Amino acid sequence: MAEYYTPREIVEQLDRYIIGQEKAKKAVAIALRNRYRRSKLDPKLRDEITPKNIILMGPTGVGKTEIARRLAKLVNAPFIKVEATKYTEVGYVGRDVESMVRDLVEEAIRMVKNQKMEMVREKAAQAAENRLLDVLLPPKRKRSQSPLGMLFPVEQPAAEEQDDDDSMAHTRERLREKLRSGALEDTHIEIEVEDSGFASFGFIPGMGNEEVLIQIQDVFGNLFPKRRKKKKTTVREARRIFEQEEAQKLIDMDEVVEEAIQAVEQHGIIFIDEIDKIAGRESGAGPDVSREGVQRDILPIVEGTTVMTKYGPVKTDHILFIAAGAFHVTKVSDLIPELQGRFPIRVELEALTKEDFKRILTQTENAIIKQQIALLKVEGVDLEFTEDAIDEIANIAYIMNQTSENIGARRLYTVVEKLMEDISFNADRLAGQKVVIDREYVRNMLQDMIKQNDLHKFIL
Image (tube, rainbow, N blue to C red; front, side, top):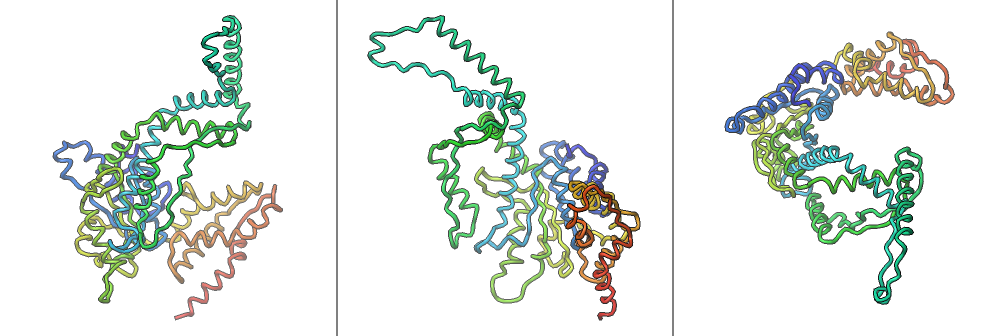
């Protein structure tokens, strides 16, 4: 579990996917470790310690969002990433800022529910297997008793009844063996499943709040008993459906909700991207919907308040907020002072160098070169990049960022996709061959990009 990682170990995990940006990794690692340290304190002192929220500043494509994505996979805590530009001031059509907390609660419930379902997987699988056997070999129905039959009962011989039961049990066990061996996986059967076809309301003009629509549907959906419908499917798919349904029956949703809310309040993390887009004071006499108004609405959530959700009240006092933005037009000081004060840790991410590009191409777990080799391997093409080719790709990407818009590591995708265009298109014809990409090939394929960037030198 990530909460037991030391800050150094957290940085090592992030290093597998993100090149450079040691300051940002260090700040995030300390913040995560402090969550664990706080959990070990006396309850009285624990409530007094609030998270030290972080702002990551730096140009696009240098790793801000990637740090958030990898953090989400690393930490065993409720985590969501939201865009600040999606929210509007209260009273206007659009998402209100409290919905980010509701989204975090939904994510926590999904996490806890999956953990609980994993714990009862074996029992659910056993129950699902019995249901499959009931579909494949329906149990023998007892004869219905009529009033006349009650007056003049006709008894079936006990020996004959016992033989029928033994034969049924034997057949059932043989079917069970076939199910477990996988021999019946593609057999088509008809099963009964819950009908989730409750008609939705669709969009109600002027309402502007999808949470209200969801809650209305929940209320109306729970008023009526759940209907069941017949569905034709394979044994493989039916087993998956039955396991889900049986696992749902075995877990206590009240307990799931309680644990999820506790996890949100004590360990939740919200990553707010594009926060620089709501910085700055807009001129004009009209209401400030998209910037300062949103900042004022975010402020109480970051400071600590109680947000009402359909699962009950949720306190935000100890949720960790990590904000990020390019801040190439605005500055952190353009945020309202109260919001600035709630983000005491500020880390500036550095622009990527040519050496960083080379490392991104080859060293990370999801390196672009590794991706391209794996993709072409599917077509039977053995792809190889020489060292000078990688050096040239990094050099072209770096120069393009310097002479035009600096989009960071995303520039590498532009360059590599252009480079691989012909090979990808003709991959079926190259099957079984080895293709070597060297510096000369890179220059030939990317000459248009190189010429374009040479022209930029003469444009004032």
